[in-house]
Image (cartoon, rainbow, N blue to C red; front, side):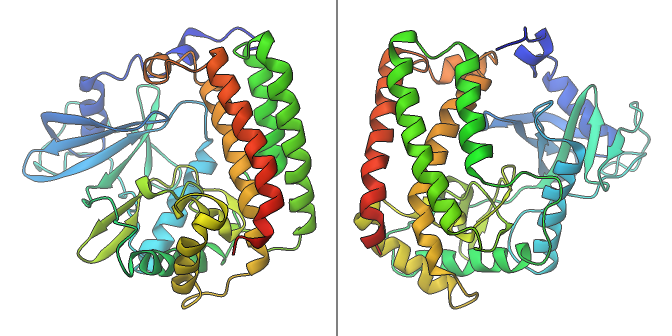
Amino acid sequence: MAEAMSASARTPYAGLTPQTVLDALESVGFVGDGRLIALNSYENRVYLVYLEDADPVVVKFYRPNRWSDEQIAEEHALLEELHEDEVPAVAPLRLDRGPARTRGIGTEHPPADLLAHGTLAHWAGFRFAVFPRRGGRAPELDQPGVLEWIGRFIARIHRVGARAPFRHRPSITPETLGDAARRTVVESGLLPDECAGAWLAAVDAVLVRVRSAFETLHDCPVIRLHGDCHPGNVLWTTAGPHFVDFDDARSGPAVQDLWMLTSGQGRSAAGDLARLLEGYEAVRAFDRRELALIEPLRSLRLIHYSAWLASRWDDPAFPAAFPNFGSAQYWQARTGELHEQLAAFDDSADDV
């Protein structure tokens, strides 16, 4: 990076011990019984915490310096709107100051500072929110009716998301996910000299095509989205699907929340996309011109993914989880993917 990173930036969660997690929860009225399980999350830290005399809760500690309080408040507000409209998304709990609610007695810890609109709290230098636990399993996307059902669900999310804009959260554009990502990789020092020329040339060629697609469709509606709508963020129960992890909620075209749920690319994904749209269009109109944005959006995600890893590389969790990142083999593979994207642009018009 251009500037040396502070120790806290390199190890943002070093002070988040199990006791800190329990103390944070107790400061807003939840008394843990000592059991907590770390859930899968690289960007934030998320724990399932068992309580005394109450159902377990999920507590999410936001990565420091990623989102502002206003941006997190907009995520929470969208979730609350969905909850009020009986769309099955998991909204954060309103938090209390004062005595622990699960025991009805005073707490040894002072109350946390409540930020945003009462769903975000501050403790020991961390911001956190508390969610009810909602179970579920991975959806079986190849089973009859599942993609149609998910399509209807996404349309309901978008019907709420279209009511008002985000004012603080970023939008999905070639600049925010493409140009900014390119700069992050270059400034990280993690792109080897022998790979830089080929990767940068491929990125630049892809971004020319991405910008052209966005300019052609500049009049497509931009709404509040889930933003990271892949199968891992869908949980299925006997009552149907619900989405979790709105941490990447952004403004953008509706198709952003559809294409990641398809299997394969191009013509091989056409059947999945048709089923999603069958469900979606039963609830909300869809501008089919947006289908031309699928490959541009896929390209931006590929570029942004490398930038995300580069920007988090000083966090010890990342080298352990992604040991191949930064190697010549990694960048050669990413360059190959971008060349495949250039070919995909030429085929995408006939995919659906």
